[in-house]
Image 1 (cartoon, rainbow, N blue to C red):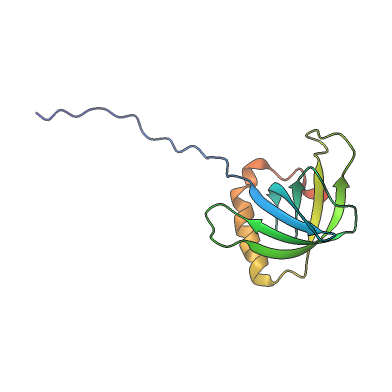
Image 2: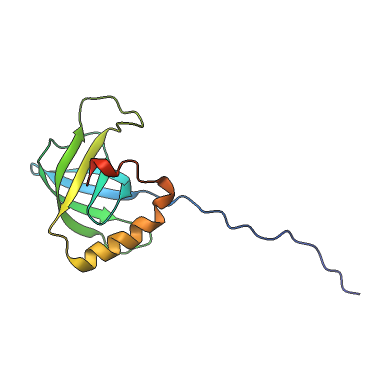
Length: 127
């Protein structure tokens, strides 16, 4: 008889994707942030130095596993510069993307599906 060891079935646990790394340029200065909350029209960028409202930004979005970053334009539609940095009002800014091509919208929508486990409670900050 063959000796078969009993192995418990492998359970696949959804792993939390790493944040999207964001480099944003405002007023001629590049700053860093990250995001777990975004869709095809905008994102919440967690950062220590958010830009003021209505500031136009140049954004570079780097997702783990993708070779090249995405370059987008955006406008700050919500910001928390001086307030508390709690889970209800995180330190950062909501950015609405500007002039996004259809193909890029589709790519961002597909990427956002990976992050849906985080919910979209912050969507009101960038849409």
